[in-house]
Amino acid sequence: MVVVPMTITKAIAPHSAGMWIAKYANRALEGIGRDFSWALTSNVIYYACQWSVMVVLAKIGTPADLGAYALGLAVTVPILFFTSFQQRNLVAADVRDEYTFGEYISFRVASLAGALFLVGIIAMFTQHAPSNIGMIMLIGLAQSFEFVSETYFGLLQKHGRMDRISLSLMIKAPLSLFLLWLVMWLTHNVLLATLALVLARGAVLVFFDMPSARSTCGSHPLKWNLRTQGRLLVTALPLGVITGLGGLNLNIPRYFIEYFFSRRELGIFSALASLIGAGNLVMAALASCIIVKLAKAWVTQDRRTYQSLFFRFVAVSAIVGSGGVLLAVTCGSRLLTLLFRPEYAHSTGVLSRIMAAGAIGYVVCVQGYTLTAARKLLVQIPPLAASGVVTSLCCLILVPKRGLAGAAEAWMVGALFLAICNAVLLAYIKEDHPVRWNATTLSPLWRRSNCSR
Image 1 (cartoon, rainbow, N blue to C red):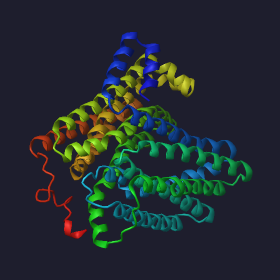
Image 2: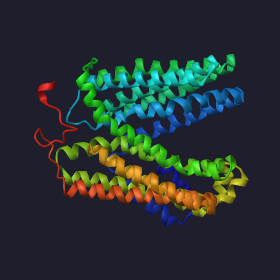
Image 3: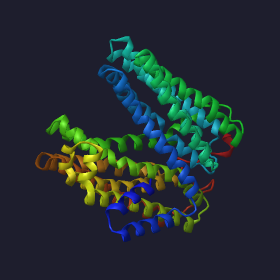
Image 4: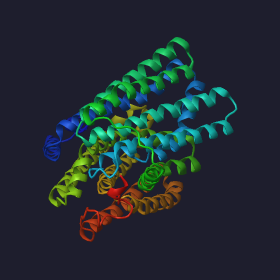
């Protein structure tokens, strides 16, 4: 993903700028290029197929079919995202083996079972048509399979098997899309098509992800211990809150746009904001390659490696963000006309502001991953909540006066506020809380007695 924006930039910007970006991107990615290429390629394929699911339903089915699928996502995603607890990162960063993988996977099964039960209750009390209830439950099950696979990905990531994770995504995404398309084309029944999607994800979990984990790390039987599960809940709960608050902060400008204006303006803003997703793919791919190394450097008190990885991570985020801003400023109008329609080209100024907010957001992502690698979770919650308040207040003032540009500026201010807060946190844990990972100095939140095993 670094290469694609760089290629576009070289075609529209001075040659020296493209060479500068290439030089420093290659230097920042030195030593992790192979894993990064695996992760980035699989992420691009996966998200392209995810987006194509909506296209298939829109092309073959009816608006009602697409609406039913969107309803299922709207009901299930917030609940399942909260109960996901970012467990992949939690497993990957557990380089001290505070919990066994059997305990992690048991916690995953229990939390998803509770989430599906809650989804079922909500579906039965809010929906009258059995088909809608069935759709909601099927999508919930499909998402659950995804999150179980994510837990196995954390184990594989911890042992440096990014190739197996990438192969899983590159198999699952096209297979799910193909089966959904085939069943939808044959039956024109969105419920059966969604069932095919569920079966594809379940099959990849059972026949690829689980065997990959066994061949790499050995067998990991489930371990049901109420006391252990309770400790894991306390450990993982901040990650769920962090995920929820992060998603809320990203959507705050959209709420104000819909309230003060119309869905047309909301659609334009959302279309422009979707371009930030290209950079998010880079950040997610790079994080999957670097978070374990960050965690190991933190545990072993290797400050030089820890700081080097962090600054290289920041360097890549700055390169990606700068590339997005440069692209918006130099050829935003042509880009919007090409990707969307000519009427979007009038929002070039809004696009530049959104890209600037995204560039700051990439740095925030790096800071968040770095804090998570150091197991500093609770401290991330107050800045996230405060950033939401700042973004909301700015939206309240700017959106009525400046429209979409005001929403983008409010988003930028909120992201900058969060970046400053996170920078203070990182300096604080580095200077005032030197790394002392041993049985007598671990925080009670993370301590686990050896006798409890």
